[in-house]
Image (tube, rainbow, N blue to C red):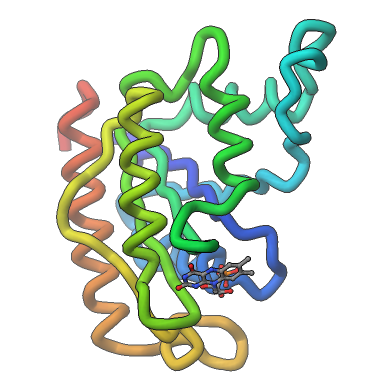
Length: 186
Ligand SMILES: Cc1cc2nc3c(=O)[nH]c(=O)nc-3n(C[C@H](O)[C@H](O)[C@H](O)COP(=O)(O)O)c2cc1C
């Protein structure tokens, strides 16, 4: 059977982002049964309805096509001011326009924060956005990393063993979640 095709989206553009690092660890830990492609949303311009009427930017067309051709989406959400980051919301706004590839797409959310929130606020807000664009979010298990600096090594590799074990369980649950929406049989 073909491996599940996942598009991984980090809500942080920061080079040393813990959320992008979390996605990279997810790629490694699930590579036997999932192909996670990490998609860079930094080229997506700020949404402007006037621009949309003239010409859809190439970067948006590419982004929508990448969403269309994957089986599910894995979001790594940083928390900014108790919500999702502007860059991520902007990318979702673009993708949600005419013939939205988000409609009915299964997804999972995880997140890493610098402090103690574990991105709980961002994840709650993301669920509201997801329901608006009809992304179908996995509810459990949750993955909310607190004090991320202590969980990653100096090369930004996830090294905290209990977190690695939890991530392995989370990714297996995400595989099951994705398969529910596919005709593929294991
Ligand atoms: C503008 C801004 C707002 C932030 N707000 C929060 C917040 O509400 N809650 C929180 O836990 N961390 C907050 N942080 C800290 C982030 O959790 C931290 O910068 C984290 O490393 C961001 O994710 P990244 O490493 O993937 O870039 C904020 C950071 C910035 C730059």
